[in-house]
Structures are given as structure tokens and as C-alpha cells.
Length: 111
Image (cartoon, rainbow, N blue to C red; front, top):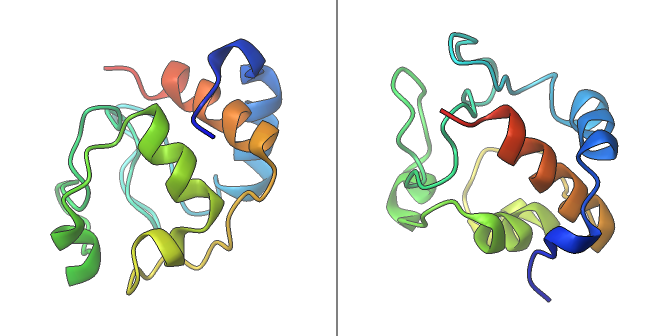
């Protein structure tokens, strides 16, 4: 099932991001990289392309363009979607959580 904007709650997504993602990622334009890359400008970007972040070859070679549906699939199980990624996060198993986080990311990472 793909991303469903009609079911997405960006406010809940912000809470989920803060508790499950923010320790490794920032969304701010000048936020810099942490353990994971800065997510500013995420939508429409090819995987493995943030300047100054060291990616695994698996992430660089995946060649996925990040958009709602690719993120929806990726966030369910990052290690399954990109075998060999160093992202330790197990994923958001609930579709609603993925919808919410993606809605938040669409707002918070816009250029």
C-alpha cells in the first residue's frame, strides 16, 4: 500500500520523528549531518547524495529517488529496502506511522 496523504497527520509525525529519528537526523537547512545525513531537501534527491556524509556503497548504489512512495516502503524496513545500509533503525511497521512521518518530512525538509 502506498503513502496516503489523506490519512497523514504531520503533527503526530513530528512527535514520531523527535522520539525515533532526531537522535540521528536533522531536517534544518543548516542542520548538518549527525550519525545519519541531514534530511533537508530530501524529496526528489537520489539516495546517498548528501554532501559531507559517508554512505555505504549499498546506499550510494541503490539509486532510488526519495519521494512519498519510496520513503513509505523504505521506512517500513530500511535494511530490507537497502541491504547493506548502516542505518540501524528497524523501521515503522504501522502504515499510519509511516504516513505521519512522511507528512512531517514533507513540511520540515522543504527547500
